[in-house]
Length: 381
Image (cartoon, rainbow, N blue to C red; front, side):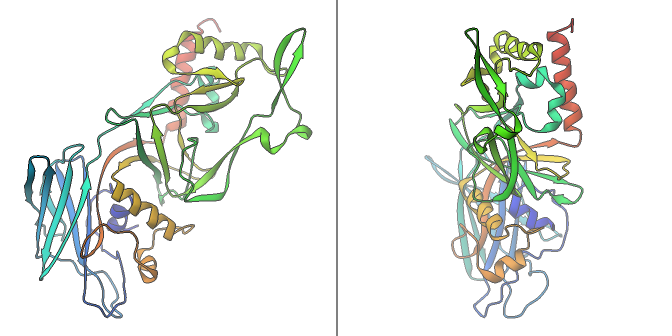
């Protein structure tokens, strides 16, 4: 995937020189300005300006190297210019400025008698934390099953906010991801997915209620929790009061180790700060997770809190390139134009705050994390 495609799709690609083949729009209309700018929580902002193609033009789009491009801060005290972008030798326009969280901005561009503009709002930052999951403490080896979540994401400025998550690896963008979050947008869900087996039923003996594993011949669809694979990205509506099922019985089952179940219940009582509790015979908690789908290999996890404009753009681009191995903008634009918030032109002006995590040793790192907690909690076992 080339540099500019990744910038517009994700909003946080490493910025390096590359050919730009953003759009190959066959048209006899006058050329239009294509804008690509995602404000980020960094000290330097970058902008790409190009002309749309005409008729049967082929190859990279022509870069615009002469223009007036200004970033304007919008506030209750009026409008203030934060500075003008300057075009570098690589054709990328840059401005030394760090956007302020929660503040709205307008981008004004004038070139060859055309004027385009757009607004966006810079999202606040967010925290990504590992919250120990009692089940994984009792069963550290379960980490590699990718069934039990341990990730908690919060923000100080909002009770609810959107997230976009995806993975990259040696071969680029990971094609399928799975999310345990029940509020994951299904716009890009695939037919395949993961099924998490509950497969238990109540059984009473001497006045005591047990959960008993169902035999395979008694299992029904209602005994599974289903989570679909998502095409390229997972779009999640996160809220402060979110509760997630940890997919594990909270009480002793007829064919399970009493000690293991006891460990889980002991951990819940000892550590209320984990936020785990029992409900409907199951373990519940406030955290969730995003994983590469079965068969996918990933080395980096990306989580982004996008502006409303960027989120709308990403969802439409992913929808238009559904079930393809890569994002082919030449094909996309030969059919129709995706969402744009650029008045008088095309492209996207958005904003995002971002989190990036080395995922290459995730299983080993998390297994060791949980094993240490188990050893500290139960030193005599």
